[in-house]
Amino acid sequence: MSIAWCPPESLARSHPLGPLAGQLLPAQSVLRKVFRGKFVAALRQAFQNGELRFPENLKLLSEPKIFAAWLRHCFDKTGSST
Image 1 (tube, helix red, strand yellow):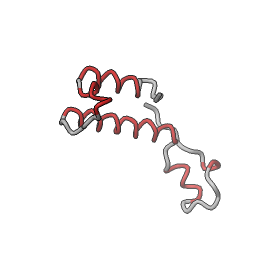
Image 2 (cartoon, helix red, strand yellow):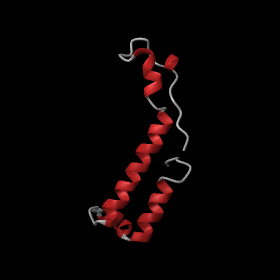
Image 3 (cartoon, rainbow, N blue to C red):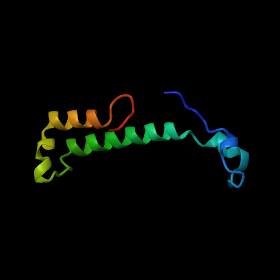
């Protein structure tokens, strides 16, 4: 994964870090991918640990293969969520 940085011009002049802010803050798309990856990993771990509880109308998600398919559908490899 390549890391893109926000150009200083994109930040408001009133930013506390001034021109350094664009060099220190990763682009929103990078943060989105990192957060999504951590979120999906936490969901998988919680499922494996038996920490997720599903209401009656979603009981099928308690099956490992169905949960994995649902997770793939919601967060595909292109990074788009549905």
